[in-house]
Image (cartoon, rainbow, N blue to C red; front, side, top):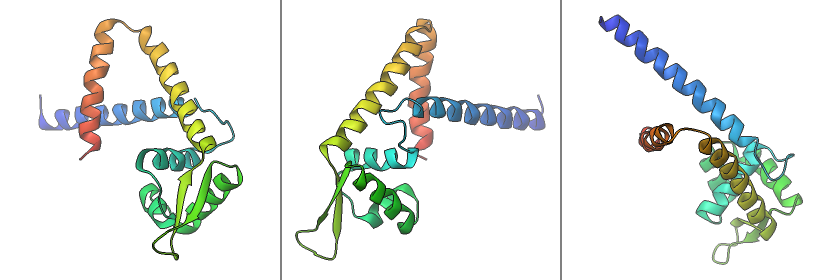
Length: 146
């Protein structure tokens, strides 16, 4: 096998892996508690659930969007009753954004639906493929951390 063939095989494998990952992610995103909620809005709720209260700037940095864009997202989530804004106790210039009970419920129900769908799909696979996917998940976490 030549170096060019190895390079072509690696490029093809990378492309196939990327496309499969995107297709699975898209399918999982379709399992949501609120159909009208955008992926970006859900990402903000999930980040707040995982990492706790944030300022608008911190959320914008975490989600890699501009502050004006995040402000629109936060406004929409606040109007829907999923988040609150509270002045910081030590620095009144700062406003902390956090989940409401309704926001926590949307995250919990969406995660439950996604896990349930995936569990059902995995149950239909042979045990050897489920073991391979478990190994692949470990590798994917490693790759994502680079």
